[in-house]
Length: 92
Image 1: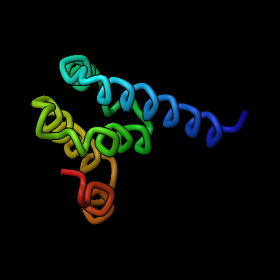
Image 2 (image 1 turned 60 degrees about the vertical axis):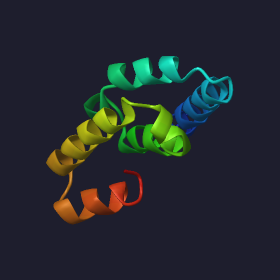
Image 3 (image 1 turned 30 degrees about the vertical axis):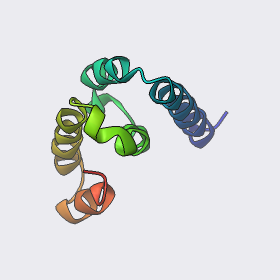
Image 4 (image 1 turned 180 degrees about the vertical axis):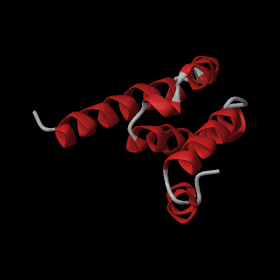
């Protein structure tokens, strides 16, 4: 399996798991996971996936802003500022 296929499977699994939790109203569980996730240990697509899948429920997820700040700090240390800004655009 290629790296791209592995990443695709990981993002699909993330979306499925988190979507199920959100649809079930398990915001506390998603909040807890947001604190445990370490953006620096994830591929950028997966880190962004967390922001994307939680975007619609961001007002019910108090830890999402903490996670966003950690992703932002990580991206600005990994990528040129212009790229980091573009990757994060609209996900705050």
